[in-house]
Amino acid sequence: MSVVVREAELSDAHGVARVEIDAWRDTYPTLLPSAHLVGGLDMARRTVFWRHRLSTRSALRTVVGAVNSRGPIVGYATWGPCRVDTLESGGQLFELYLLPDHQGRGLGRRLCAAVGEYFLKAGVSSMCVEVLEGNPNRFFYEAIGGRLAARARHPFAGTILPTLIYAWDNLELLVGERAR
Ligand SMILES: CC(C)(COP(=O)(O)OP(=O)(O)OC[C@H]1O[C@@H](n2cnc3c(N)ncnc32)[C@H](O)[C@@H]1OP(=O)(O)O)[C@@H](O)C(=O)NCCC(=O)NCCS
Image (tube, rainbow, N blue to C red; front, side, top):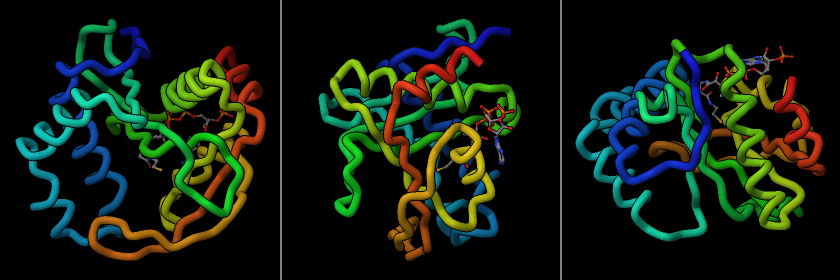
């Protein structure tokens, strides 16, 4: 099975919502309120949300990992201009989620490299990501070259939680990692 990384299309809304819901429920049961993970992640509502987001031309963009390009969506990443005002990063990776069965096979690294490549093409050479301090997957960002740049507290699913902000000061390195 080959997973193709490509920019998201409107018809991907349902698939992205499926990944979002499954990955959140798998990743955050000890970190986020169960009310949010159960009632707050409704498939129909999240599909409408993603349809709206993917149909709106905004600064926030989405890339997906899809089986054989047109097959099921198994992961996605979103990115846009950096919103962390204490950092000088030009861009920010906002979301990165894979279906549990597709984690640990290099897709996370490929999606990050694809985002880095979009930034470089747009003349943006650095980026950051904010991750919940309690999420053990934060070590993934260290494994792909992110440096711990700041700590913050962020509203997340109705609660305020401590976060870590990782930064890449030279995206050329991250994009070069794609070949690994
Ligand atoms: C975090 C996530 C995107 C990583 O993607 P992935 O495809 O599983 O990771 P990869 O296979 O590309 O791994 C790349 C490197 O990171 C390392 N890595 C991945 N997850 C790791 C973890 N939890 N802890 C430590 N290292 C990790 C891998 O060992 C690999 O290192 P190597 O190339 O030196 O062998 C994915 O596991 C996921 O979606 N997790 C659940 C959602 C989540 O937590 N998202 C982040 C929210 S900010």
